[in-house]
Image (cartoon, rainbow, N blue to C red):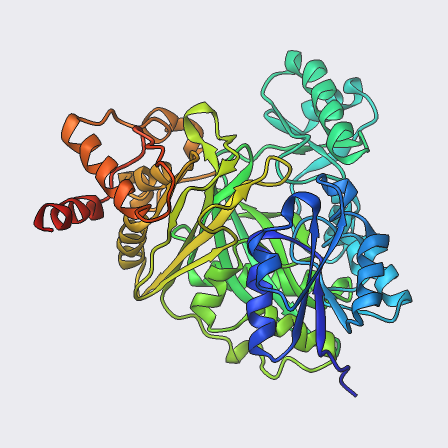
Amino acid sequence: MPAEIRKVLIANRGEVAVRVARTLREMGIAVVAVYSDVDRAALHVRVADEAYCIGGATAAESYLRIDAILDVAKRAGVDAIHPGYGFLSENPAFVDACNAAGIVFIGPPAAAMRQLGSKTSARVKMEAAGVPVVPGAMCDTAEQALVEARKIGFPVMLKAANGGGGKGMRLVDRAEDMPSAWERARSEARKFFGDDTVYLEKAIVRPRHVEIQVLGDQHGNIVHLFERDCSIQRRNQKVVEETPSPAASHALIERMGAIAVQGAQAVGYFSAGTFEFLLAEDGSFYFLEMNTRLQVEHPVTEWVTGLDLVREMVRIARGETLGFTQADVERRGASIECRVYAEDPETGFLPSPGRIEHLAVPGGPGVRDDGGAYDGCEISSYYDPLISKLSVWAPTRELAIARMRRALSEYIVTGIRTNLSFHERLFSNAEFVAGRYDTGFLERNKETLLTDPPLDGQRAEDLAIALALGARGQGRPVRVDATAAVSPWVSQFRARQLRS
Protein backbone atom coordinates (compact mmCIF):
# COMPACT_ATOMS: atom_id res chain seq x y z
CA MET A 1 0.00 0.00 0.00
CA PRO A 2 1.49 3.41 -0.98
CA ALA A 3 2.90 5.47 1.90
CA GLU A 4 1.11 8.71 2.70
CA ILE A 5 3.24 11.78 2.14
CA ARG A 6 1.38 14.91 3.23
CA LYS A 7 4.22 16.98 4.69
CA VAL A 8 7.86 17.09 3.51
CA LEU A 9 10.98 18.65 4.99
CA ILE A 10 13.47 19.87 2.38
CA ALA A 11 16.95 19.28 3.80
CA ASN A 12 18.61 21.90 1.61
CA ARG A 13 18.72 25.59 0.77
CA GLY A 14 18.69 28.05 -2.12
CA GLU A 15 17.37 27.43 -5.59
CA VAL A 16 17.00 23.65 -5.27
CA ALA A 17 14.89 24.01 -2.11
CA VAL A 18 12.67 26.52 -3.91
CA ARG A 19 12.39 24.22 -6.93
CA VAL A 20 11.42 21.18 -4.82
CA ALA A 21 8.91 23.27 -2.84
CA ARG A 22 7.12 24.29 -6.05
CA THR A 23 6.41 20.70 -7.05
CA LEU A 24 5.36 19.78 -3.52
CA ARG A 25 2.83 22.63 -3.55
CA GLU A 26 1.44 21.42 -6.87
CA MET A 27 0.98 18.00 -5.29
CA GLY A 28 -0.85 19.46 -2.29
CA ILE A 29 2.01 18.59 0.09
CA ALA A 30 2.96 20.94 2.96
CA VAL A 31 6.54 22.27 2.87
CA VAL A 32 8.94 22.55 5.81
CA ALA A 33 12.21 24.48 5.33
CA VAL A 34 15.37 24.47 7.42
CA TYR A 35 17.91 27.28 7.49
CA SER A 36 21.21 28.36 8.98
CA ASP A 37 21.74 31.59 10.89
CA VAL A 38 22.77 33.45 7.73
CA ASP A 39 19.87 32.07 5.67
CA ARG A 40 17.10 33.41 7.88
CA ALA A 41 15.82 35.71 5.11
CA ALA A 42 16.51 33.31 2.20
CA LEU A 43 13.88 32.73 -0.47
CA HIS A 44 13.52 29.03 0.35
CA VAL A 45 12.49 30.04 3.88
CA ARG A 46 9.92 32.52 2.57
CA VAL A 47 8.18 30.03 0.26
CA ALA A 48 7.78 27.32 2.92
CA ASP A 49 4.76 26.71 5.14
CA GLU A 50 7.05 26.31 8.15
CA ALA A 51 10.74 27.04 8.68
CA TYR A 52 13.18 26.13 11.44
CA CYS A 53 16.73 27.26 12.23
CA ILE A 54 19.18 24.35 12.50
CA GLY A 55 22.46 26.02 13.41
CA GLY A 56 25.34 28.29 12.50
CA ALA A 57 26.55 29.69 9.21
CA THR A 58 28.77 26.88 7.99
CA ALA A 59 27.35 23.74 6.40
CA ALA A 60 28.97 21.64 9.14
CA GLU A 61 26.99 23.62 11.75
CA SER A 62 23.69 23.40 9.89
CA TYR A 63 22.86 21.64 6.61
CA LEU A 64 25.17 18.69 7.34
CA ARG A 65 23.76 18.08 10.83
CA ILE A 66 21.68 14.91 10.65
CA ASP A 67 20.65 15.25 14.30
CA ALA A 68 19.35 18.80 13.90
CA ILE A 69 17.44 18.01 10.72
CA LEU A 70 15.78 14.93 12.20
CA ASP A 71 14.91 16.85 15.35
CA VAL A 72 13.05 19.40 13.21
CA ALA A 73 11.43 16.63 11.20
CA LYS A 74 10.01 15.08 14.37
CA ARG A 75 8.87 18.40 15.83
CA ALA A 76 7.21 19.41 12.57
CA GLY A 77 5.57 16.01 12.14
CA VAL A 78 6.76 15.44 8.58
CA ASP A 79 6.17 12.22 6.67
CA ALA A 80 9.22 12.48 4.41
CA ILE A 81 12.46 14.33 3.68
CA HIS A 82 13.71 15.44 0.26
CA PRO A 83 17.49 16.06 0.30
CA GLY A 84 17.85 18.12 -2.89
CA TYR A 85 21.45 17.84 -4.11
CA GLY A 86 24.71 18.41 -2.30
CA PHE A 87 24.94 18.40 1.50
CA LEU A 88 23.41 15.09 2.78
CA SER A 89 21.81 14.00 -0.50
CA GLU A 90 24.25 11.12 -1.08
CA ASN A 91 24.96 10.22 2.54
CA PRO A 92 23.74 6.66 3.31
CA ALA A 93 23.95 7.33 7.05
CA PHE A 94 21.30 10.03 6.58
CA VAL A 95 19.04 7.56 4.76
CA ASP A 96 19.53 5.04 7.59
CA ALA A 97 18.69 7.70 10.18
CA CYS A 98 15.51 8.67 8.33
CA ASN A 99 14.45 5.02 8.12
CA ALA A 100 15.15 4.49 11.82
CA ALA A 101 13.01 7.52 12.65
CA GLY A 102 10.13 6.23 10.53
CA ILE A 103 10.53 9.05 8.00
CA VAL A 104 10.44 8.35 4.26
CA PHE A 105 13.61 9.37 2.42
CA ILE A 106 12.73 10.70 -1.04
CA GLY A 107 15.65 9.22 -2.92
CA PRO A 108 17.51 5.95 -3.51
CA PRO A 109 18.21 3.24 -0.93
CA ALA A 110 21.23 3.46 1.35
CA ALA A 111 22.56 0.15 -0.01
CA ALA A 112 22.84 1.57 -3.52
CA MET A 113 24.51 4.72 -2.21
CA ARG A 114 27.10 2.66 -0.38
CA GLN A 115 27.93 0.61 -3.45
CA LEU A 116 28.30 3.72 -5.61
CA GLY A 117 29.53 6.33 -3.11
CA SER A 118 33.22 5.49 -3.50
CA LYS A 119 34.46 5.92 -7.05
CA THR A 120 36.82 3.00 -6.68
CA SER A 121 34.19 0.55 -5.39
CA ALA A 122 31.73 1.88 -7.98
CA ARG A 123 34.25 1.11 -10.74
CA VAL A 124 34.56 -2.49 -9.51
CA LYS A 125 30.80 -2.91 -9.22
CA MET A 126 30.08 -1.41 -12.63
CA GLU A 127 32.83 -3.38 -14.35
CA ALA A 128 31.29 -6.57 -12.95
CA ALA A 129 27.92 -5.43 -14.31
CA GLY A 130 29.31 -5.02 -17.82
CA VAL A 131 29.60 -1.23 -17.74
CA PRO A 132 32.77 -0.01 -19.56
CA VAL A 133 35.22 1.75 -17.26
CA VAL A 134 38.32 3.84 -17.96
CA PRO A 135 41.53 1.80 -17.55
CA GLY A 136 42.94 2.57 -14.13
CA ALA A 137 44.46 1.28 -10.90
CA MET A 138 44.50 1.75 -7.14
CA CYS A 139 47.86 2.89 -5.79
CA ASP A 140 49.25 3.44 -2.30
CA THR A 141 52.31 5.50 -3.22
CA ALA A 142 53.51 7.86 -5.92
CA GLU A 143 56.01 5.19 -7.00
CA GLN A 144 53.20 2.65 -7.55
CA ALA A 145 51.20 5.28 -9.41
CA LEU A 146 54.16 5.90 -11.71
CA VAL A 147 54.52 2.18 -12.46
CA GLU A 148 50.80 1.89 -13.29
CA ALA A 149 50.85 5.09 -15.34
CA ARG A 150 53.64 3.70 -17.52
CA LYS A 151 51.61 0.52 -18.08
CA ILE A 152 48.45 2.47 -19.01
CA GLY A 153 50.25 5.22 -20.89
CA PHE A 154 50.37 8.98 -20.27
CA PRO A 155 48.46 11.22 -19.84
CA VAL A 156 46.74 9.95 -16.70
CA MET A 157 44.40 11.50 -14.14
CA LEU A 158 44.70 11.24 -10.37
CA LYS A 159 41.31 11.38 -8.60
CA ALA A 160 40.04 11.43 -5.02
CA ALA A 161 38.36 8.10 -4.33
CA ASN A 162 35.60 9.67 -2.23
CA GLY A 163 35.26 13.06 -3.83
CA GLY A 164 33.57 15.02 -6.55
CA GLY A 165 33.07 18.54 -7.90
CA GLY A 166 36.53 18.62 -9.45
CA LYS A 167 38.33 18.50 -6.08
CA GLY A 168 41.29 16.16 -5.57
CA MET A 169 41.96 15.79 -9.30
CA ARG A 170 45.27 16.25 -11.11
CA LEU A 171 46.18 15.67 -14.75
CA VAL A 172 49.65 14.15 -15.16
CA ASP A 173 51.23 14.42 -18.61
CA ARG A 174 54.78 13.29 -17.79
CA ALA A 175 56.48 10.85 -15.44
CA GLU A 176 58.51 13.60 -13.75
CA ASP A 177 55.28 15.39 -12.73
CA MET A 178 53.85 12.39 -10.83
CA PRO A 179 55.40 12.97 -7.35
CA SER A 180 54.16 16.54 -6.98
CA ALA A 181 50.77 15.79 -8.56
CA TRP A 182 50.32 12.81 -6.24
CA GLU A 183 50.93 14.94 -3.14
CA ARG A 184 48.67 17.77 -4.32
CA ALA A 185 45.82 15.38 -5.14
CA ARG A 186 46.11 13.65 -1.75
CA SER A 187 46.30 16.94 0.11
CA GLU A 188 43.20 18.30 -1.60
CA ALA A 189 41.31 15.03 -1.09
CA ARG A 190 42.14 15.11 2.62
CA LYS A 191 41.08 18.76 2.92
CA PHE A 192 37.71 18.45 1.18
CA PHE A 193 36.66 14.87 1.92
CA GLY A 194 38.59 13.81 5.01
CA ASP A 195 40.11 10.90 3.06
CA ASP A 196 43.35 11.17 1.09
CA THR A 197 42.80 7.99 -0.93
CA VAL A 198 43.37 8.65 -4.63
CA TYR A 199 43.38 6.41 -7.66
CA LEU A 200 44.70 6.61 -11.19
CA GLU A 201 42.84 6.58 -14.52
CA LYS A 202 43.83 6.87 -18.14
CA ALA A 203 43.14 10.43 -19.30
CA ILE A 204 40.88 10.43 -22.35
CA VAL A 205 42.07 13.10 -24.79
CA ARG A 206 39.48 15.79 -25.68
CA PRO A 207 36.51 13.88 -24.22
CA ARG A 208 32.88 14.94 -23.94
CA HIS A 209 31.19 14.62 -20.56
CA VAL A 210 27.87 12.93 -21.33
CA GLU A 211 25.52 11.68 -18.64
CA ILE A 212 22.43 9.48 -18.71
CA GLN A 213 19.43 10.19 -16.48
CA VAL A 214 17.80 7.07 -15.03
CA LEU A 215 14.55 6.69 -13.10
CA GLY A 216 13.39 3.55 -11.33
CA ASP A 217 10.67 2.47 -8.92
CA GLN A 218 10.74 0.08 -5.96
CA HIS A 219 9.21 -2.72 -8.03
CA GLY A 220 12.19 -3.26 -10.32
CA ASN A 221 11.06 -1.04 -13.21
CA ILE A 222 13.76 1.31 -14.49
CA VAL A 223 14.15 3.49 -17.58
CA HIS A 224 16.60 6.02 -18.94
CA LEU A 225 15.54 9.54 -19.90
CA PHE A 226 18.22 10.17 -22.53
CA GLU A 227 21.42 12.16 -22.12
CA ARG A 228 22.76 15.54 -21.12
CA ASP A 229 26.02 16.90 -22.55
CA CYS A 230 27.86 18.64 -19.69
CA SER A 231 31.21 19.25 -21.39
CA ILE A 232 31.36 23.03 -20.85
CA GLN A 233 33.13 23.11 -17.50
CA ARG A 234 35.39 25.30 -15.40
CA ARG A 235 37.62 23.72 -12.76
CA ASN A 236 36.03 20.36 -13.66
CA GLN A 237 32.60 21.76 -12.71
CA LYS A 238 29.72 22.09 -15.14
CA VAL A 239 28.42 25.51 -16.21
CA VAL A 240 26.35 24.65 -19.31
CA GLU A 241 24.34 21.49 -20.09
CA GLU A 242 22.25 20.52 -23.08
CA THR A 243 20.23 17.73 -24.64
CA PRO A 244 20.45 16.21 -27.19
CA SER A 245 24.24 16.11 -27.26
CA PRO A 246 25.52 17.54 -30.56
CA ALA A 247 28.23 14.84 -30.56
CA ALA A 248 26.12 11.69 -30.08
CA SER A 249 23.86 9.81 -32.46
CA HIS A 250 20.52 8.35 -31.44
CA ALA A 251 21.99 4.86 -31.70
CA LEU A 252 24.91 5.76 -29.41
CA ILE A 253 22.57 7.22 -26.78
CA GLU A 254 20.42 4.09 -26.92
CA ARG A 255 23.54 2.02 -26.17
CA MET A 256 24.62 4.32 -23.36
CA GLY A 257 21.09 4.35 -21.93
CA ALA A 258 20.84 0.56 -21.97
CA ILE A 259 24.22 0.32 -20.19
CA ALA A 260 23.09 2.83 -17.54
CA VAL A 261 19.90 0.89 -16.88
CA GLN A 262 21.97 -2.29 -16.63
CA GLY A 263 24.26 -0.65 -14.08
CA ALA A 264 21.35 0.68 -12.01
CA GLN A 265 19.71 -2.74 -11.91
CA ALA A 266 22.97 -4.28 -10.66
CA VAL A 267 22.77 -2.28 -7.41
CA GLY A 268 19.00 -2.44 -6.88
CA TYR A 269 18.60 1.25 -7.63
CA PHE A 270 15.36 3.23 -7.48
CA SER A 271 14.45 6.95 -7.62
CA ALA A 272 16.27 9.47 -9.85
CA GLY A 273 19.98 8.99 -10.55
CA THR A 274 22.57 9.83 -13.16
CA PHE A 275 25.33 7.81 -14.80
CA GLU A 276 28.21 10.00 -15.91
CA PHE A 277 30.39 8.92 -18.83
CA LEU A 278 33.42 10.18 -20.73
CA LEU A 279 32.69 10.05 -24.45
CA ALA A 280 35.83 9.72 -26.60
CA GLU A 281 36.20 11.14 -30.09
CA ASP A 282 35.93 7.64 -31.60
CA GLY A 283 32.52 7.06 -29.98
CA SER A 284 33.75 4.81 -27.17
CA PHE A 285 32.48 5.73 -23.71
CA TYR A 286 33.57 5.00 -20.15
CA PHE A 287 31.86 5.09 -16.77
CA LEU A 288 32.96 7.93 -14.49
CA GLU A 289 30.57 7.74 -11.56
CA MET A 290 26.91 7.57 -10.62
CA ASN A 291 25.28 10.47 -8.82
CA THR A 292 22.66 8.96 -6.53
CA ARG A 293 20.47 12.06 -6.38
CA LEU A 294 18.72 14.72 -8.41
CA GLN A 295 21.16 16.63 -10.62
CA VAL A 296 21.53 20.40 -10.84
CA GLU A 297 20.91 20.16 -14.60
CA HIS A 298 17.69 18.11 -14.39
CA PRO A 299 15.51 20.88 -15.96
CA VAL A 300 16.80 20.14 -19.48
CA THR A 301 15.59 16.55 -19.15
CA GLU A 302 12.23 17.78 -17.86
CA TRP A 303 11.91 20.14 -20.84
CA VAL A 304 12.37 17.45 -23.49
CA THR A 305 10.50 14.58 -21.80
CA GLY A 306 7.65 16.48 -20.16
CA LEU A 307 8.32 14.70 -16.84
CA ASP A 308 8.68 16.43 -13.47
CA LEU A 309 11.54 14.51 -11.85
CA VAL A 310 10.78 15.76 -8.35
CA ARG A 311 7.16 14.61 -8.70
CA GLU A 312 8.39 11.23 -9.92
CA MET A 313 10.75 10.95 -6.95
CA VAL A 314 7.86 11.58 -4.56
CA ARG A 315 5.66 9.04 -6.33
CA ILE A 316 8.44 6.44 -6.19
CA ALA A 317 9.04 7.16 -2.48
CA ARG A 318 5.34 6.52 -1.90
CA GLY A 319 5.82 3.07 -3.40
CA GLU A 320 3.98 3.77 -6.66
CA THR A 321 5.09 2.22 -9.95
CA LEU A 322 6.54 4.30 -12.76
CA GLY A 323 3.42 3.79 -14.84
CA PHE A 324 5.35 3.84 -18.13
CA THR A 325 7.99 1.80 -19.93
CA GLN A 326 11.09 2.69 -21.94
CA ALA A 327 9.05 2.54 -25.13
CA ASP A 328 6.73 5.22 -23.73
CA VAL A 329 9.53 7.73 -23.10
CA GLU A 330 9.87 10.22 -25.94
CA ARG A 331 12.13 13.21 -26.44
CA ARG A 332 10.86 16.37 -28.06
CA GLY A 333 13.01 19.29 -29.20
CA ALA A 334 16.21 20.60 -27.60
CA SER A 335 16.99 22.21 -24.26
CA ILE A 336 20.00 24.09 -22.88
CA GLU A 337 20.77 25.25 -19.35
CA CYS A 338 23.38 27.66 -18.07
CA ARG A 339 24.23 28.15 -14.42
CA VAL A 340 24.14 31.78 -13.29
CA TYR A 341 26.75 32.21 -10.58
CA ALA A 342 27.86 35.08 -8.37
CA GLU A 343 31.42 34.83 -9.61
CA ASP A 344 33.92 36.74 -11.69
CA PRO A 345 35.11 34.95 -14.85
CA GLU A 346 37.99 37.42 -15.25
CA THR A 347 39.52 36.29 -11.95
CA GLY A 348 39.27 32.57 -12.71
CA PHE A 349 35.61 32.34 -11.67
CA LEU A 350 36.31 33.34 -8.08
CA PRO A 351 33.09 33.73 -6.02
CA SER A 352 31.59 37.22 -5.79
CA PRO A 353 29.35 37.16 -2.71
CA GLY A 354 27.38 40.20 -1.61
CA ARG A 355 23.97 41.84 -1.74
CA ILE A 356 21.95 41.78 -4.94
CA GLU A 357 20.63 45.30 -5.45
CA HIS A 358 18.39 44.58 -8.42
CA LEU A 359 17.39 41.31 -10.06
CA ALA A 360 15.39 41.03 -13.28
CA VAL A 361 15.00 37.51 -14.66
CA PRO A 362 13.97 36.68 -18.23
CA GLY A 363 10.68 35.16 -19.28
CA GLY A 364 8.66 34.47 -22.38
CA PRO A 365 8.05 31.32 -24.44
CA GLY A 366 10.30 28.38 -23.64
CA VAL A 367 12.25 30.10 -20.83
CA ARG A 368 12.60 28.81 -17.25
CA ASP A 369 14.59 30.35 -14.43
CA ASP A 370 15.04 28.16 -11.33
CA GLY A 371 16.29 30.70 -8.84
CA GLY A 372 16.73 31.23 -5.15
CA ALA A 373 17.42 34.98 -5.06
CA TYR A 374 15.49 38.25 -4.98
CA ASP A 375 16.09 42.02 -4.85
CA GLY A 376 18.06 42.83 -1.72
CA CYS A 377 19.00 39.27 -0.83
CA GLU A 378 22.49 38.28 0.25
CA ILE A 379 24.61 35.77 -1.69
CA SER A 380 26.53 34.19 1.16
CA SER A 381 30.22 33.37 1.10
CA TYR A 382 29.48 30.21 3.10
CA TYR A 383 27.83 28.25 0.28
CA ASP A 384 27.99 27.60 -3.43
CA PRO A 385 27.34 30.98 -5.14
CA LEU A 386 24.69 29.65 -7.56
CA ILE A 387 22.02 32.31 -8.16
CA SER A 388 19.85 30.37 -10.58
CA LYS A 389 19.68 27.88 -13.42
CA LEU A 390 18.47 29.48 -16.64
CA SER A 391 17.11 26.94 -19.12
CA VAL A 392 15.33 27.14 -22.45
CA TRP A 393 13.47 24.81 -24.80
CA ALA A 394 12.93 25.04 -28.56
CA PRO A 395 12.14 22.63 -31.41
CA THR A 396 15.80 22.59 -32.55
CA ARG A 397 19.23 23.29 -31.07
CA GLU A 398 19.67 26.28 -33.36
CA LEU A 399 16.47 27.85 -32.08
CA ALA A 400 17.32 26.94 -28.47
CA ILE A 401 20.64 28.82 -28.76
CA ALA A 402 18.84 31.84 -30.20
CA ARG A 403 16.32 31.69 -27.37
CA MET A 404 19.09 31.47 -24.77
CA ARG A 405 20.79 34.52 -26.27
CA ARG A 406 17.53 36.43 -26.01
CA ALA A 407 16.96 35.27 -22.44
CA LEU A 408 20.48 36.22 -21.38
CA SER A 409 20.00 39.67 -22.88
CA GLU A 410 17.06 40.20 -20.50
CA TYR A 411 18.86 39.04 -17.36
CA ILE A 412 19.97 41.89 -15.07
CA VAL A 413 21.81 41.50 -11.76
CA THR A 414 23.35 44.50 -10.02
CA GLY A 415 25.40 44.84 -6.85
CA ILE A 416 27.63 41.81 -7.45
CA ARG A 417 29.65 40.29 -10.25
CA THR A 418 28.11 37.41 -12.20
CA ASN A 419 29.06 35.13 -15.09
CA LEU A 420 26.23 36.40 -17.34
CA SER A 421 28.56 38.17 -19.77
CA PHE A 422 30.62 34.97 -20.04
CA HIS A 423 27.47 33.06 -21.05
CA GLU A 424 26.61 35.72 -23.64
CA ARG A 425 30.03 35.36 -25.25
CA LEU A 426 29.83 31.55 -25.11
CA PHE A 427 26.48 31.42 -26.88
CA SER A 428 27.90 33.63 -29.64
CA ASN A 429 31.05 31.55 -30.07
CA ALA A 430 31.09 29.92 -33.51
CA GLU A 431 32.66 26.66 -32.30
CA PHE A 432 30.13 26.25 -29.49
CA VAL A 433 27.24 27.10 -31.79
CA ALA A 434 28.49 24.43 -34.19
CA GLY A 435 28.61 21.92 -31.31
CA ARG A 436 32.37 21.48 -31.57
CA TYR A 437 33.48 21.46 -27.96
CA ASP A 438 34.82 19.16 -25.24
CA THR A 439 35.75 19.39 -21.56
CA GLY A 440 38.85 21.47 -22.36
CA PHE A 441 36.94 24.05 -24.42
CA LEU A 442 36.95 26.86 -21.84
CA GLU A 443 40.62 26.49 -21.04
CA ARG A 444 41.55 26.68 -24.74
CA ASN A 445 39.30 29.72 -25.35
CA LYS A 446 39.66 31.60 -22.09
CA GLU A 447 41.09 34.75 -23.67
CA THR A 448 37.96 35.31 -25.75
CA LEU A 449 35.40 33.89 -23.33
CA LEU A 450 36.58 35.23 -19.97
CA THR A 451 37.40 38.86 -20.73
CA ASP A 452 34.81 41.55 -21.33
CA PRO A 453 35.47 44.03 -24.14
CA PRO A 454 35.70 47.66 -22.99
CA LEU A 455 32.52 49.72 -23.27
CA ASP A 456 32.46 52.88 -25.36
CA GLY A 457 30.91 56.00 -23.85
CA GLN A 458 27.43 55.48 -25.32
CA ARG A 459 27.23 51.83 -24.25
CA ALA A 460 28.33 52.72 -20.72
CA GLU A 461 25.71 55.47 -20.59
CA ASP A 462 23.01 53.08 -21.83
CA LEU A 463 23.96 50.53 -19.17
CA ALA A 464 23.80 53.11 -16.40
CA ILE A 465 20.35 54.26 -17.51
CA ALA A 466 19.01 50.71 -17.72
CA LEU A 467 20.27 49.77 -14.29
CA ALA A 468 18.96 52.98 -12.75
CA LEU A 469 15.52 52.40 -14.30
CA GLY A 470 15.56 48.81 -13.09
CA ALA A 471 16.18 49.89 -9.50
CA ARG A 472 13.86 52.94 -9.56
CA GLY A 473 11.77 53.33 -6.45
CA GLN A 474 13.88 51.05 -4.29
CA GLY A 475 15.44 53.92 -2.35
CA ARG A 476 19.07 52.94 -2.72
CA PRO A 477 21.95 53.79 -5.09
CA VAL A 478 22.81 51.48 -7.95
CA ARG A 479 26.36 50.19 -8.32
CA VAL A 480 27.03 50.00 -12.05
CA ASP A 481 29.33 47.22 -13.24
CA ALA A 482 31.03 48.96 -16.17
CA THR A 483 32.38 45.70 -17.55
CA ALA A 484 29.04 43.90 -17.72
CA ALA A 485 27.69 43.00 -21.15
CA VAL A 486 25.07 45.42 -22.45
CA SER A 487 21.70 43.97 -23.35
CA PRO A 488 19.66 45.00 -26.40
CA TRP A 489 16.99 45.82 -23.81
CA VAL A 490 19.20 48.63 -22.52
CA SER A 491 18.55 50.72 -25.61
CA GLN A 492 14.83 50.15 -25.18
CA PHE A 493 15.02 51.38 -21.56
CA ARG A 494 16.93 54.45 -22.73
CA ALA A 495 14.43 55.16 -25.51
CA ARG A 496 11.53 54.98 -23.04
CA GLN A 497 13.28 57.43 -20.74
CA LEU A 498 13.94 59.85 -23.59
CA ARG A 499 10.27 59.67 -24.65
CA SER A 500 8.95 60.28 -21.11
